[in-house]
Image (cartoon, rainbow, N blue to C red):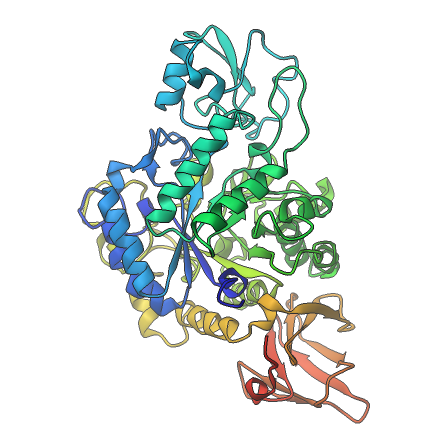
Amino acid sequence: MIKDLWYKNAVIYSLNVESFLDSNGDGTGDFEGLSRSLDYLQGLGVTCLWLAPFQKSPRRDHGYDISDYYQVDPRFGTLGDFVDFTHEANQRGIRVMMDLVVNHTSDQHPWFQEARRDPKSKYRDYYVWSETKPEDAHKGVIFPGVQDTTWTRDSVARQYYFHRFFEFQPDLNIDNPLVRAEIRKIMGFYLELGISGFRMDAMPFVIEGKSPQARSPMNYELLRDFRQFLQWRSRDAIILAEANVEPKHSIRYFGDDGDRLQMMFNFWVNQNLFLAMATGDTKPLVRALEQTRERPANAQWGQFLRNHDELDLGRLTDKQRQAVFDAMAPDPSMQLYERGIRRRLAPMLHGDPRRLRMAYSLMFALPGTPVLRYGDELGMGDLLELPERDCARTPMQWSNEPQAGFSRAEKLVRPVIDHGPYSYEQINVADQRRDPESLLNWTARMIRIRKEVPEVGWGDFEVIDAGRPGVLALRYRWLNNSVVIVHNLTDEAAEVTLHLPGERNSKLVNLLTRDHSEADKRGTHHLIMEPYGYHWYRAGGLGYLLERTVV
C-alpha cells in the first residue's frame, strides 16, 4: 500500500524547463539540460519533478496556451529528448509529473482555427460560443487590471467565444464527450512516455458549466472519470489539482470514498500560513489546519510556500491581506492582480536566514506532501523590473560564471539576477555545495529528515497547546510511532511547556541536534525555542523502527 500510494511521502520539486539549464547555447533551457541536471536533483533528495507546460505553444502565457498537445515545443528539444529525460529520471528513482492544461487551448490550436472557420465542423462544439455577448461577460476575470472580459468576438466565426483566462486562450467545452475523449487521449499518450501523474491546471474551471444561457453545476463526476482512466492505464499515476477552494468543497474533489482526485494543493493553509508568519500569531494557521483536516485515507494535500504563480491571498479578508502586504510586499510593484504577491520567498522574508529556514522546516512539517520551487533551496531572489509573474521565473543560478552557468548565450529567455544580494555571484549552487552551512545543504538535510518521518505524510496530526501564540506544536502518530515538531514564528525566544498525554516514553529525541528533552514528573516537557527556532523530535527514542507495526 505504501508503495502504491507513493505520493503520500514524496518530495515534489517544481521547475520550468526553459529556466533550468540550456545545453545548446540558444538561451533557453531544454530537456537535454534537464537530463544533465538529474544528478543534482537526485543529490538534493527530491523524489518527483513537476514540469511546467513544455508542449508546442506560442508562449504568450508561459506555455499555458498550448497549440499542439502531442509535440514538445522545439525550443526545449524533441519528443525523443523528453523520453530520454523521463527514462533517466526513472533510472534514478525520480518520478515525473507534468502540467495538464485542458481548461483551454491556444487560439492558434488547429481545433480552434477549424472551429472558427467552419460552423459545421465537429471542432465547433469543442469550444463555447454565443451569438451575443453575455451580460455577465465582465464578471469572473482571472487577471484584474490586465483582463477586461471573459467573452470576445471572433471576426471569422462572427460569434463570441468564452475564455476564463486571456482572450488568446479559448475555453474547451468539457460538456462535449469528444473533448473528454481528447483529454483521455492526451493523458494516455504521456503515461506511455513515462509520466507518473498530472498537475491539473485550473481544476474548478475545467469542471464548471460554461453555457452562456444557464450555467450548469460543477461536474465533479468528471474527476472520477479521470481517476478511473489513470488507474486503467497506470495503476499508480495520480492527479494533483490546482483548486483554490474553500475547505467545505475539498471533499467533493477528493470524493467521499477517495475515488476522485489523489492530491490537491492546500491553498487554504498556504494563505493562512503567510498570515501567521506576518503577524507572529499561529491561530489562523491552526484554524486552517483543522478546517482542512477531513480527507479520505488515500488522499493527500500538497503543502507549499511559493510556486510558479503569485502568492494568492484572495481567500483572506482585506485586513488580513493588507497585514501580509505590509510585512512582505509593502511596495505596490511587489503585488499583483489586487490579491497576491509576485516575489520569491527569500526577499519576502527580508533575506533573514533564520526565518527562511524556519519557514521551510514548517512547510516540511505540515500534514501532506511538500512541494518545493526550483531555486528556493538556494534562497534565490527576484527581478521586479520584469513584468507580472516573470520576476520570479529567472534562470537557475548554477555558478558564479557568466549567465549564472545557466547558458553560454548572450541573450537569455529571461535575464539572470546579476546585481544585489540575490545575484548569481552571491547565490549559486557551486558555492553552496562547498559550504556545509549553506541553505542548499541544509535543505538536502531537511529533505532526508522529512523522508525518514513518514508520520507527517501518513499519520494523524494533533495540535499541542504550547502556551504561546507564536509557537506551533504538532504531534503525528502512525503505526505505533510518534513525532513532535515545534516552530517559533516570532523573533523572540520563548519558553514552551508541552504536555503529551498518551506517550509511553518520557523522552523526546531531537532529530536535528543533541538538544533532547526529558519530561518532568508530571509528564511535561520544557523547551527553549530560539527566535524563529524549529525542533523535530521523535517520541521515545531511535528504536522506533523496531516498534513500528506492520501495515
